[in-house]
Length: 361
Image (cartoon, rainbow, N blue to C red):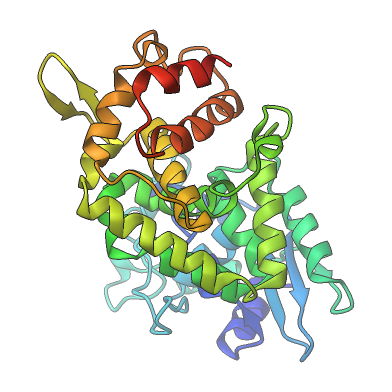
């Protein structure tokens, strides 16, 4: 199919790019310009995959960056809010430096692609693979996972978000809602880069999946290849959504409301006994111990400590932490040790000494 035909389908609403996918569109202007360079040089593009919906429309499954770039160049791409985004202004490229400052069409010929170049782009053919409407959501999920497992620049959570769209867009919207919860955002206090990569959603998924798992499900063997575990469990939850979501949301909200009221973002940072202060930025380890440990007690309805700053200090005083709490350890090994530790240290009247003995056992 030609780029012109594909553009017409998008313009008429017959090619659907879900808002959840659009949030993953973050190619740099240099990358986007190189794609247009490739088209103008006649370099074939990889296939684009679309899924046929019940009504016959096509839903973009793989090729988001390429299709969005082509649409943005022409001024056709619409944002998450449905409004048209500004047309892309190209940068110079290795083989076509004259692209610098050019856009699809402009009154000034020095700032516009020529009519001939525009026609060349619109007539360029793109190979499309169509997943028929009879395919199940699970098969679409599996295919998307396979397609994006080769050289993808997406983070595990960005890929997971796209995968969840095939199962339940509503479930992904629910995860987004939890990530925006004020107490969670305040206590995790992530950097702009991590937020752009949707690590906030990764943390939400880790909480939802891991906070109430039984001891046998927290072994290194059970957690082997954590990303696949999170993918599998998230899909299972999405499949039965919204069943169970009310209770999970209540646990999540109560946990982080308790954290913000009893220590704030300090509990997710390292305690420096020399400086008598919590230092540095957000740490996964602290999150796994405090947030998941507290979430376990909240979900179970058991008594738990609320002096979270003291709990955090006790944790960082443990010999296991002083020796290098994550050096040479896999994520699975760390979780297998620290999630149970969090549950234990947050039990009323527990002491660092007892926790240390429990960890050794």
